[in-house]
Length: 77
Image 1 (cartoon, one colour):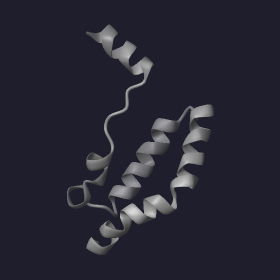
Image 2 (tube, helix red, strand yellow):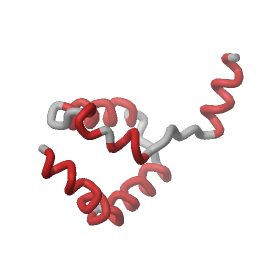
Image 3 (tube, helix red, strand yellow):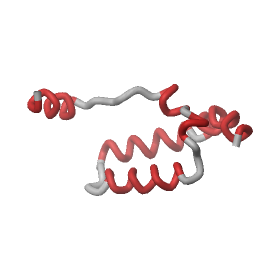
Image 4 (spheres, helix red, strand yellow):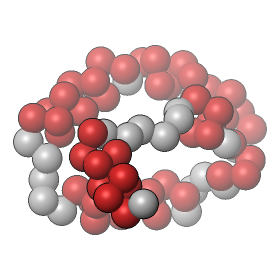
């Protein structure tokens, strides 16, 4: 597991173009069930990866808020 975690930055760099294409496609036409798709992917990945050992997401990615998110949260408050 330790070796795999050390390889993550290189693996991410190797897949950068593929991932960028995928996310660009998602932005253009978001599937209605995207939340369910992402939840399934999340659960599948975390059966293999111990979040507390890796923590790469927390180290490299901050929360993303869209204008709609901000408006929705503002209405709540």
